[in-house]
Image 1 (tube, rainbow, N blue to C red):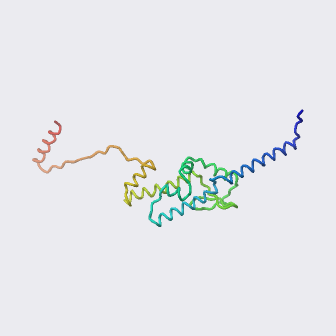
Image 2: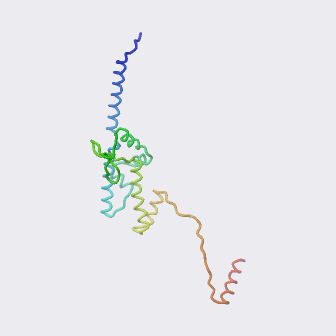
Image 3: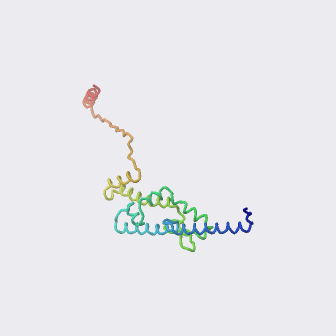
Length: 195
């Protein structure tokens, strides 16, 4: 026959289970490949990549960004789709962040924690800002005719879904007639066109 647990026994068992879960969650957070804390490293790597490319007068590319990060297109796609955005939510929920705790790093707000700076930007926003850097460069190339604008236009169409304006263009032609003889000739030509 099972005897009911006393409240103190239940509390002790529950506390052990809760502690075990907290340890497991902390271990999982610490051993994740992508963390919110790790985004600071990506901000540094992005800045280094941009500075290097500009110093060498070379273009920014998506492949170059991924190589600088040491990641792959799978990471890029997941960041774009917001699959890592929960990491920012965890930081915001687990820390009572005040204005005094926030500093700016690489143009984004960062939380100054005991473990270092934690960017307060979601991975999808980080992806968007990185994407805009590359798009901005391609647009500038088109407008300034730097390099081959056709390559930039292709990149904008392929990567950024740019489309050409296919609306019909109307051409207005005005005929200026100087004398009566030219008027007669013009009228005869127009009659021939109508037939």
